[in-house]
Length: 313
DNA sequence: AACTGGGACAACCGCATACCT
DNA sequence: CAGGTATGCGGTTGTCCCAGT
Image 1 (cartoon, rainbow, N blue to C red):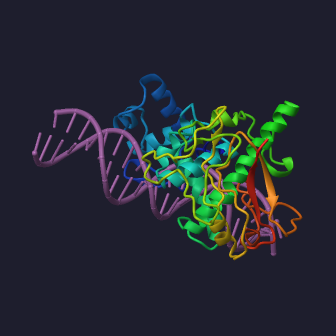
Image 2 (image 1 turned 90 degrees about the vertical axis):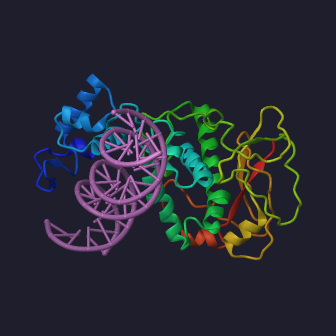
Image 3 (image 1 turned 120 degrees about the horizontal axis):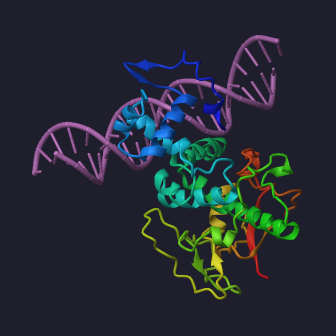
């Protein structure tokens, strides 16, 4: 979206004048003034910059405009599944520390991430009639959406390597991905410090075999506590999302015992959606986090419940 | 065609912290 | 060390656009 540059700078009727200071949407002329001034003198000292550049704006306003819109290294366009995955993971760890989260998404601003969270993620929580900070909703993210995102990332990767053609992340291929966005490699995109542990390819981490909750290795404290899982072979990386029967059952409001896969999802593996035993599934019914629409009932009923498990190959 | 409601995003506001004198 | 100023951050609001009616 590039509303500011489409706006006619003469349409200033709605803009509020507070004393000698302008407020409201920025005009093209103001943008040019700010960009040119920063190009010549650099950024910083925003109050004096605003005056020197001839902008009738507060320093705060100039800084925000520059950081959130005019800065040349901004990456505009659709939030990719990789970025979504990272946002979910980092938010689960740090909460609403938007600036901190944004530092790990090059070219994205804290404002953009914050808006994404409010418009997409909180919307889903609202649809599910639960608080976005509730354990219930966190479980939905952790056990359904995040594995699904991993699945989609890997599927797209596979498709890309097979066809070596531009990809669309959108369902149905109707909405083209911003062409400026390169599709990053999952392994390189997901650095080890983002809550991944090393585990062997051939065996899942030891678990009780009961419904004991295996908490995610990522913690909100941000202290970097890592799980005491076995070391990996062959550089395998494990995604922190774990599939746990208790939480899955809670998510689905059912007492039915769900086959659990307590091993974290491994990024390097092939992921498959597996129907629950004894149930028939016409189509995968997991929430689609990207397109922003899904059937709430499909989350909460058993009819469409799928869970994801790593397929060892 | 007009209206309306919701989504998406830009911008503002208040507070906290850092920095400077 | 205290006070003032600048900057950064998170929450909230405002505005535009578009799909549905």
